[in-house]
Length: 171
Ligand code: FES
Image (cartoon, rainbow, N blue to C red; front, side, top):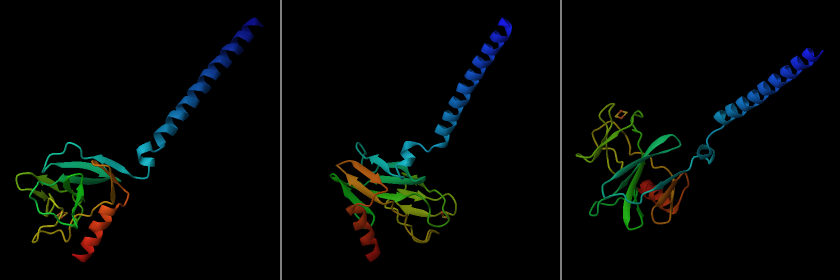
């Protein structure tokens, strides 16, 4: 009889441990399936341009798309439809997806041009397609809002972005 009780006890203990293990596994699986908090926050990307040098390009992502931000050099021409002011400097921004067939162009510092590896498309640092190459239009610009002197939040539409859109519709 004592032997039966010991077996029952062992069985219940093992069952309990297995149950706890199963619950822990389900919790871990749920965490894996849930999107990360940054994804849940509806596709906003915060970019700090602090410390960027003139002519420097920084890459980031917004909603899975490659986005670049370039700090313009003093003396560069400023295009109201492609450039914006942040703090004391001007910047260009664009979604780095070729407007021909969607490849991802690379920045060539020595030429100061984006080169598309697919069919030879080229874009200026402002994201404007170079005439005579396949892309039919400039890079798209992601909506953004400026916060403070060095921060951009992609995914929100601020006055600088609106001004660029307005200028490009007139161009
Ligand atoms: S996809 Fe870029 S040139 Fe064709």
